[in-house]
Image (cartoon, rainbow, N blue to C red; front, side, top):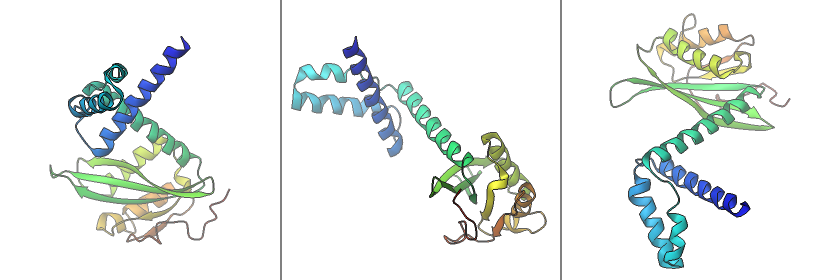
Length: 206
């Protein structure tokens, strides 16, 4: 029984490794069955013999299976990131928008935060702006994500943008709206630079 469990774990690990590579390379999920599996099987058979391919054949690399594993890994990475952000002392946001091939505005948010004496910079989320790029709409997108993720606005100490009108308005821009949500006043820079996307003037140690 112990041997069976051990083999099963190895097969599961192999499945996740294969799914990870497919996701990392941005390939269609079907490539697991159509290319990855046949190549792996052929190489193992050529080097170790035909008998060893029986174990390779037990690895499920169907389109649906690969998709599920990628979703699981993505969810795990997201939860680990949010857990670290919730436990940080301070965080800074860098925001911007871009138009995709369907001409829809996509809003991107990056976050820099301190965690266990280390400053980390990560991609936080990407959301479509279904209406337009007014400051109110942009703030609502960010605020909804922050609230659902359980992140405290009081830890936000800096906002970095591209300086667009919707971002830079002193009274109704994104920066002004975020400041109203912070019990501690967030520093606001009109244009992004590596130096401004940080914690200057703040003690990041607990």
